[in-house]
Image (cartoon, rainbow, N blue to C red; front, side, top):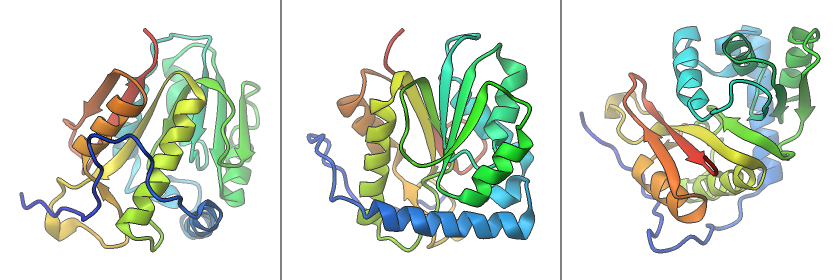
Length: 228
């Protein structure tokens, strides 16, 4: 395994955020990319930028480890796409309230049509979360839409700050890892250092943080728990 490290750094002694990212432009670029993918591949994992259903389900399983309630909780899904996470969660938990957020209007329209019969789910065209018990963000940090590592890391930090502010019991997210095979890494994607993000979350958000990097994908998952 050859490790290709990206040049961004996080000062382990500091919890100050990096330079402010241009959020509106980033969201517009992400919306355009994902709307085009949906138009090309349709309402399926490839249309949401995933390789396929098995990998998508594996990621959902890691992220869902955050949830300590069997039912009666509320959950934010940031970067919800067409609502695939909701499909995965419904048969595994009792009744709960779900809100999906996405910056792509095409994705939100697809999600609303797909889940029209679910009266405990809503989909919002926005990146601004409302408070919930839990928040999950799957795959939203992978495509850096032409930004430098420093710019994209600032964006990642700003999103994590928002997840923290709006999650009563905790939040979870994933990212591609720098421990990927070098020959399979692509310049348009962002590969994060899991140890640095673990450190950031421990110092800035909670003492109770789990790093999951033991499943057979080129990414990792971080769970941030804010209460027992």
